[in-house]
Image 1 (cartoon, rainbow, N blue to C red):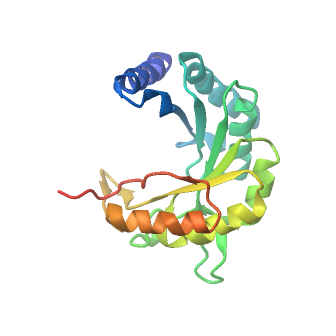
Image 2 (cartoon, rainbow, N blue to C red):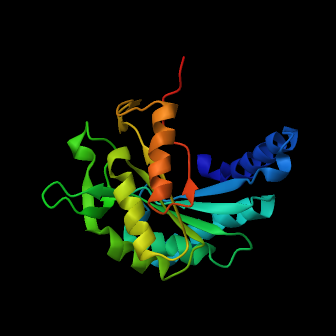
Length: 220
């Protein structure tokens, strides 16, 4: 199946990114990030198997020349995120750890978990207090920690918790919409100007990294 193309496609993705960077007049200011995702059924694997899978992809990306690796955990368990870090912490590049969160509707406490959209209640899953998860995860390693793929409305609070729970670099890139077979449902959008205003609040809350919005609405 497509698994046979795993290495070739990962190598090609980095090569294409490097080619585009080299075309820029500001190429020396541009870093190439390689994404390692836990999307899928990785939580069902034991830790050793998880580490083998994550290391295989990350090693290919680093070998092709990425400047950093971003671990995008997308609602995975704490155990899986820790496996992702264990698999990549000895590589020759910085590792950014990205985790998602949600607001517990009963307690209004920010929780480690996932909620893709306020328009889809089924997309919400809370697992553990966000601050506890951060400290547990980053005890393994990592160069920076970011909130990803979570609601824009919870981002400032999440950044404040990241800042209070970790002494290194912190950041955020929230999400808009959710997946409903067979397509992505585009909801919860903001304009680029609104997003910039929100990002300024995250910086004031302690963020050192502000990444562009997942599924940002652009003017037509």
